[in-house]
Image (tube, rainbow, N blue to C red; front, side):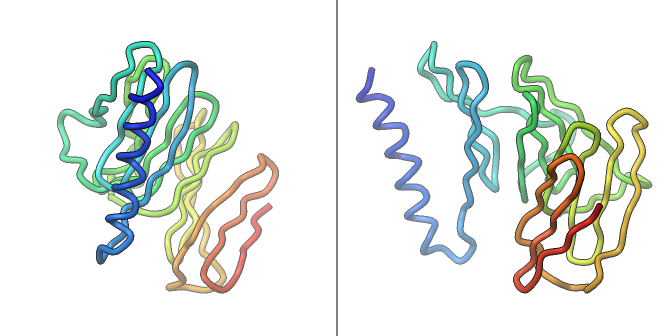
Length: 171
C-alpha cells in the first residue's frame, strides 16, 4: 500500500519536474478533505481516495468545455475554481459542482480566493467580489492596471492582492 502512495506522488513530482522546463509550467495545488486528496492542475481536477486507493478525474461541467484552470482555492469543504468556462464551486463531500455566473455571464479568468461570505476574483485591473448569500457580483478597480496578479488572500476582514511589485489591501 505504501509503495502505491509513493508511486502516485512520485508521478506527480515527475510531472512537475517535466513541466518546469516547458514553456508554460504546470502548477499543482493540493487540498485535503476527509479521506480525499484533491489535486488541481491547469488542465483538470483529480481526486485521490485513501480508502479505495484510486485517482479519478473530476468532471467540472458536463455541458461546457473546461480545459484551462487558472486558479483554485479551498474553503470549508468547497473548492473554488477560476476556469476558461467561468467560476465553479465544487463540493468536496458530494463532488457536485456548481457554475457561478459572472456579470452578464462573461468569462473572466484570474486568481481566486474565498472567505466565509465572499468569493474573490482578481484580474490585472479589477477585484471582483461575489456575495455567497446575495448571489451578486461587485467589482473594484485596482490602484494600478495591467499588473500580473500573483495571488489573493482573505482573512474575513481584509483582502490582499499581490502583484509582481506590490501588495494591495482592501478593507
